[in-house]
Image 1: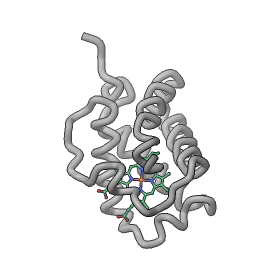
Image 2: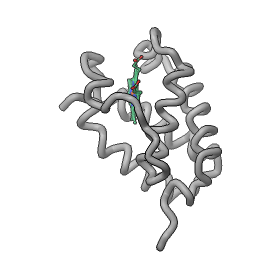
Image 3: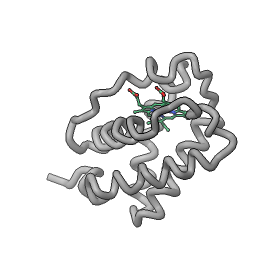
Image 4: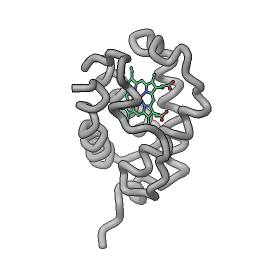
Length: 119
Ligand code: HEM
C-alpha cells in the first residue's frame, strides 16, 4: 500500500506548522484578512488542522461545519480562494513539503472550491 499524502508530508506535526504559518500569511494579507476580522483564530486553527488532515487522507477527525455552510454569505470570490490557496502552498513549501506533494494537496483543496465559493 502506498503512503497517504498525510504520511508523506510528515503527518500532524507538519500540518500544525503549515496551518500556523498559513494563518500568519492570511492575517498579513490585506486582500483576505477582513474576512477573518471576527473569527476566533484558535478555534479556526483546530478546525483547519482537522479538515486538512482528513483531506490528505489522515485521521477522520474533522467535526466542523461543511464547507458550503461555513462559507455561505461571505461572498468569497475566486481571487480570494486563489490567494488563500497560494498562502497554503507557500506555507507547505516553507515547512519542507515536496513540490509534487504540494501540487497533490492543492488539487484536493481545489475540489472544495465550488463549495467555498457557494457555486
Ligand atoms: C482554500 C480553501 C479553504 C478551506 C479548505 C477552508 C476551510 C475552512 C474550515 C475547515 C473552516 C472552519 C469551519 C468551522 O468553523 O466549522 C473555515 C472557516 C472560515 N473560512 Fe475557510 N476555507 C478555505 C478558504 C477560505 C477563503 C478563501 C476564505 C475567505 C477569504 C475563507 C474564510 C473563512 C472564514 C472567515 C471562516 C471562519 C468563519 C467563522 O468565523 O465562523 N475560507 N474554512
